[in-house]
Figure 1 (tube, helix red, strand yellow):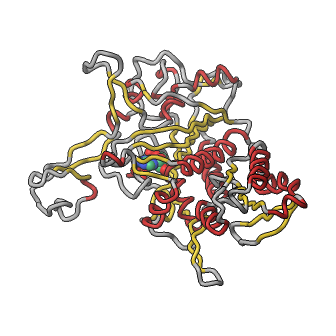
Figure 2 (cartoon, protein in one colour):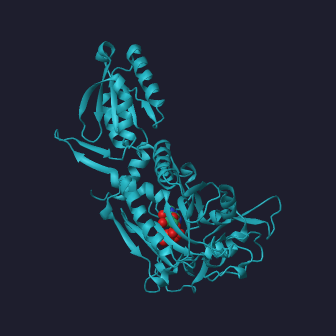
Figure 3 (cartoon, rainbow, N blue to C red):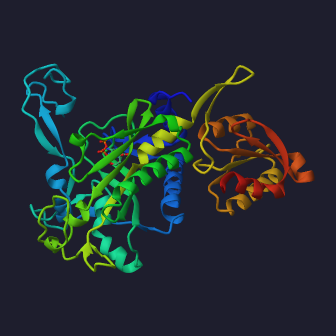
Length: 453
Ligand code: ATP
């Protein structure tokens, strides 16, 4: 399938209500986007697919929905206060600021001047004040990743669920990074969502689990409709690894603007639990952690044989929801020339991801008998709980088909005068455009077959 241009995707997203620039009526806010009526459904469906695979279909993973506002001590001990930075350079002539690693030939990217400052670290975390007093001490952070809240809840989850390793904690939620150069639509933004699993394992078994999760995650993306050949596995070089990582694999995807990271799968060792634990000196922590004087919890598990307390290693598959949505849109967008010479845009989404599962279309918009019958069919299908079903009462069948092709609705169900006589409807398939006449009472099963795999 050919890669689309970003413009085609941005245009579809705006035209059909998937994604809008935030606060557009006031000129927007750079690096922040809103998901419209169809975007919210697509995004929810992607998250649901992740949650189903990572939590419901396993017995060794529990879910979590922790807070966004984060105690600054968490991000001190996690290393983010010191290391979550990009080196920045200022142009003394045009006053623009840019990432040092983006500069070529020591020249300003905006005006070409060589009158630049030395690179200075710039922390990517958003700080905000907590409570009525606005002093230097009463601040918190908006979390830059969902992971840290999982580590700080480790003991709560273990104590309340009696889980023993290997087991994982999964979370989906917002993260915030003050990216210097947000760009490429929803690829690099300042407010985004992550789907993260922290999978706790025994030291020594970490490398095998790392391999296991790389395979699982690639398979999952393929199940969402991403072509396997478009995912490249990048072994992040040692010198580029994050401070916590022993090894990281990035799943690189062919986005419209280039090949970039869709998901990272890291072996974070015992760095995180070790960093946030009390009594570190009794725990044989292998990672280089800051001495923790503040934590009141021992984040370790007891070895049944030796009775020793051990800090588990952690494998982290961390995927961006927004980058996932962009990849899925890119994979499913097609422009086709039909036999009659006309063009159509079709979003060939996997049905479980489609924002609308079925459109019910009365052939005549002012005929109350047909419209009432259509509403009944819509209500019945909606009650199956398989996702959104809409009544498309525009009276223009051709236009309705075009719209639903473009937004990825797998089937359209048309109700006409024959329906009133023999209880049959026309079902049109998005991909083949084939139409067939079926009995109304078979629609439930048709929907289930489409969506329950
Ligand atoms: P990059 O190198 O592209 O900045 P990263 O290595 O900093 O990404 P991680 O910290 O590994 O990213 O975050 C895990 C996932 O979160 C990424 O694979 C990506 O899908 C998503 N993500 C990270 N930063 C952003 C962002 N600014 N906008 C959208 N998604 C992001």
